[in-house]
Length: 246
Image 1 (tube, rainbow, N blue to C red):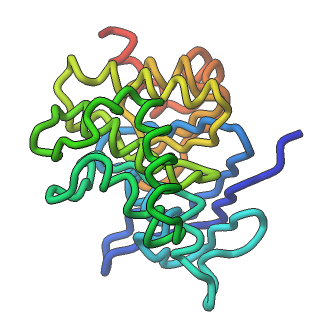
Image 2 (tube, rainbow, N blue to C red):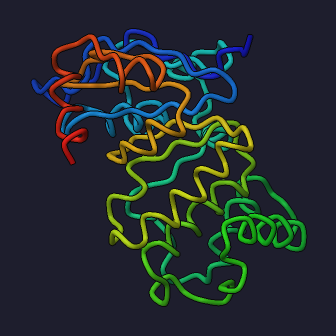
């Protein structure tokens, strides 16, 4: 039995009077690929940002190996070194080369020496097929290439968990496949992943656990077979019907 790595417990988030998340509760075990699906505005990205402490939950907590990382006195930087994030807009440093983007965190957060950081970065750029582009600046890359560099940068930190916030939504359709192929390979290698995505085929075929959200709450969760073949909630059925017709 895999041990829980991340546990979200009764998590809520409000911005002023606007409630975005209500009493969200789920567990991610080691090696899980958890896909969070739902319509735009359902709270998926806010949930991911709360898990990574980019947003502070209004209520509830997030546990990492049983420790409450939302508690006073916890170290968000140390936590984020173990729980990495890949953003839909890449968030690369435009004034740095591909290689420098991938070594910055290793040198200034993990305090690796220059040669060790370069070796680690190159290994991960090789993994995502971007090693030939180490001297390029982000402006010289396609969207798919930028996202693969962003994934390599996150992997270089050797995270226990990698969070993906709609990693293909800013890409042209022809570039989506190259990023999903990298993510499929990471799933095969056993990396624990939480993926907010509109790519239903990826959620159905690659994930071990699917969470369907609507209006800031989890309506239904289970295995891909549970959700895609035998949904129980009327909102889940309605949401998935458009993808079955596509």
